[in-house]
Length: 310
Image (cartoon, rainbow, N blue to C red; front, side, top):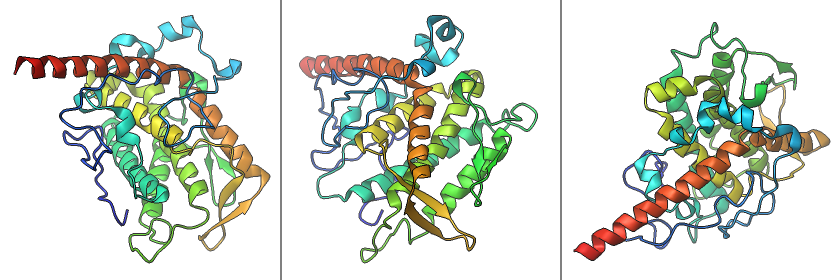
């Protein structure tokens, strides 16, 4: 955040980052990576400098069957499309940490960008997501999400209430310079990783709700390419940044409202729950990964053809 612009080259922008050797250029005509969709979504051993995704397949209890696939709009190939900016860029370069940039710095900037995009997409759906239409915060495979308050008590909220609380929490956290510093003489806190995972879970819950409940409205408004682009970008970033991991740290909010960290068993539960929740959209991830690889391959071929005709 200190050394980089808050406005990253993102899936919604027409222009992307032009760091030396760290992003796609107009002359990029390399073939699409062949390893993007080698398996499931979750990967706890991915190194951020590797592009291969050797995955842990989803557990049987969270696997889709073919009959279920046929009833879900977001799993239909004709709707698995992207924004032009994502389809034409090498997504591995988009998420790769630039040389010389601190890992926490890179994660912080991406979290800001993901928050802005999720918030914008949900705001476009707020007229459809109401106390009446969405009395429970639901996700794929009949899953539901409960809010955990400052006393670590789980509370059931409607979807708009849950997502509003999530966005307010993330906005407040991003604005706290003791957590997301903007000065060079400030350091990221020791509990930064655990707090990022908490924000990631909340962002994923909002995205999952859009897929599970509001995808039809997104199609009608022609916003589904933006959601698909955001989802694929978001998940791949989590994998390559090792945010999806078996970490035992957890963030607590004490009575004074300040954050503290501890090494406790609940933290391990938090990490497992995140991985399990992500698995509910594993089939979608694999579908989008394959579709992106095809779209990017076509874009590269068109660039090569245009270059040969010049």
